Image (cartoon, rainbow, N blue to C red; front, side, top):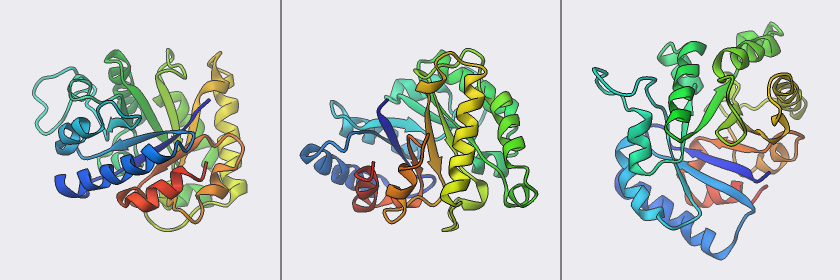
Length: 246
């Protein structure tokens, strides 16, 4: 499988800074293929100009979330079909900041993933435990519950990517040990084997304070097939170094 690096810009930047960032990535990509798929997920209002900029390039475009419904009275939300219309191929669902800040449960994540699939989008489904759950040795129990509740039964490696992002490592500079990452990624792979015939083809990403200094070590861990990158994706030079780490 071809690994995947995702740049999740979250609620950062401007049209000017976003286009400059992507232009920098495109310049690097024109000179060298790092051997991985590259995806950028800007804020919704930047999607159109970024889509125009990366048209006919290897860089892919994704949304940071979508609503579970096709349309209707959902002020401030965006549907999967709208993301598709603007040029997206991917969408992130179940990110820890959505689960925590917006109180999203597994059921909501499941329905969003289904909406993504119905509209031809690849869903990046995020899983992860809190620091308290980690300290109480509940990590694998939490991950199993999220896997069972968030992934559609009809999912396949063609329309679904799984991202493990321990909540306590998001934006904190903290990262689990290599052994802890391996334990969770191996567990996810084993759980997928119990439910999906193409389980070995699913891409499993790690997210949580990934940076140019730790990326190569993290990506060398078994069953880590790329990364979901936050803060380090906001600078073209740092993001490109991460892409080259695979």
